[in-house]
Length: 210
Length: 429
Ligand SMILES: Cc1cc2nc3c(=O)[nH]c(=O)nc-3n(C[C@H](O)[C@H](O)[C@H](O)COP(=O)(O)OP(=O)(O)OC[C@H]3O[C@@H](n4cnc5c(N)ncnc54)[C@H](O)[C@@H]3O)c2cc1C
Image 1 (cartoon, rainbow over the protein chains, first blue to last red):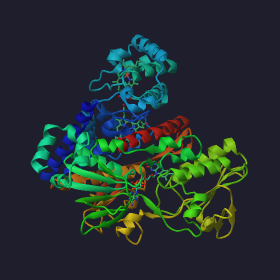
Image 2 (cartoon, rainbow over the protein chains, first blue to last red):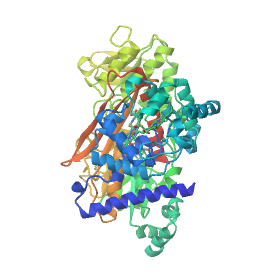
Image 3 (cartoon, chains in turn blue, green):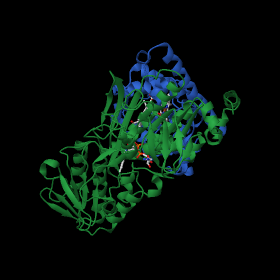
Image 4 (cartoon, each protein chain N blue to C red):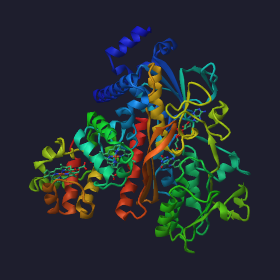
């Protein structure tokens, strides 16, 4: 518990120090806003260090840098559907998006189930989660979202341990063909074969991961 | 403790700052040994986050937060309480989390600031010395004829850090007879939470539709237009029959007699220039100005608000004093909780830099205000800002789409509550 907190503190301290160093060699205006300055503006929605207070805002702290950068670019150019990110992403340059992606990727992921607010959030249904576990295996989601979705690489975001309400929204969006949610072809084919009910069960499974 | 000892201790055990050893237990000498002492007045959306982020960025800086109340009741989402679908307890926050970051709490009212001696005086007469002071006291009200402290108990504003006023208005609405109007007097610009009165009207209309269908909301407004107007009136048309003679909301703009001349709490009447409105449930949101302590310390100009430099939020009037949140003038940023949070972080980073002998870096600011049209329909305004030639400039953002499908409105309603959870955790834990 304590160790986690200290870890976060050290990271933030590190950012600020880095920012200050660059600030002292160039004038502030030339240097642009530091990664820490930019990332702190997102915390009002995504939580301190990108760890969301839930129940629907996604945790972004600890996601892969490449994924974060791609997503911000897609929000900005409109190729990724969103309720609000598309509007916000327009306010950042490509360099700033790269800084943001780098900053958030360096924070330590904390799963929704270990957040104190998880008790107040939409409860995970163990029966649904068990059904979801089977469904995602037979649909071969786990070819990419390995280890119950806890795995991540450059392109694949971690889904295991994400907030349930966010995953439920995501599943609805994925089933809404008109939205054209960016995703790999193999995932699209797999999703097509599943009903929204099936995907709801899979969301419960992913969200249950610690 | 000597400077060397203290620094050495922090170095050996980074946990010291976290467990609150530093500010809470060191002597006055200890303060002098730190890199500096920052005092913050007001533990709301602006002040609390400034205190925390200074400590997070540099545990070598001592921070004292002066907040008159033991608990903070959030204004954001308090309209949900009034409309009967949220418990006031969910709005209540304490300061234990800030103490864990090593912020020293002083639960007293700040009664004076001496910018020359660099001290803050509290009600008990204590004088607290600062190297830099952050002032975030929220808003105070300008006079409305007939509206004194006693009248505000009968015709609540429910517009300060929520709490008792919110509870009074909720009870009045619940007790109101079916057929009586819910009369709201909206404030002139600028005021805290520009979409707030219209969110309140929406949610009260939703309550009336379910519980008191013969009643309606009457908004008496000195203005002729308001924040997110198209989204609100579009929502009202769809949900509450706005524009028809059965409408649950009637909005009377300034140009059509909405300006209020005086109120009478004894007879529960609001007098406009042409008419009078009576009800058992009247919500007066008065015109606003910077918090009293800011005015007392002469941090305000003739507008009643505090002019600041936007790269640091340092006052243009007094050196070493930073004013953030509702009290400052930061337009085009609105007076909102999100803006206060964002301004606080810019001020905190600047103060950390300055106390370390560095130049403040370039700022970046964000605002978002979610509002509900009904419990399952949300809208928002969002913006990203930069400093351009000394002024705050919007560089991206916008409103929810006017023609957004229902599922998007439903998602935004859920994201609204989620925003609250994240920003409150950012602020108080
Ligand atoms: C009904 C309503 C709905 C709202 N909805 C939203 C929303 O959805 N989104 C949003 O972003 N914003 C919203 N707001 C606006 C938001 O509440 C304010 O903009 C925000 O609180 C401003 O922060 P602040 O730090 O300036 O002031 P506050 O949060 O009001 O904090 C000021 C603090 O200072 C303390 N204080 C004042 N004077 C002294 C003194 N002399 N000594 C010691 N302590 C003192 C007060 O007790 C208080 O705790 C809403 C406001 C209302 C009323």
